[in-house]
Image (cartoon, rainbow, N blue to C red):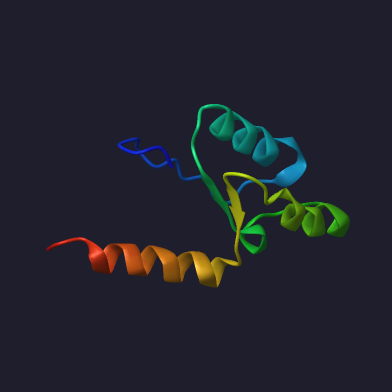
Length: 80
């Protein structure tokens, strides 16, 4: 993500257009994107598999469990 920029969280999105459009829009604006394909819904199994191919540049693709671990680590690093 851009330094000093707010986080953009999208979840529970269908891949058929909406998710890809959101990812493109965020990356066009300079935001890094973390995508958890196993937390997204598609109507076709092939599209679900293709979510893993979206990783490039500032797009990171991780399973949901890894995203939760990363967020937990970040939260632990924030002073109380």
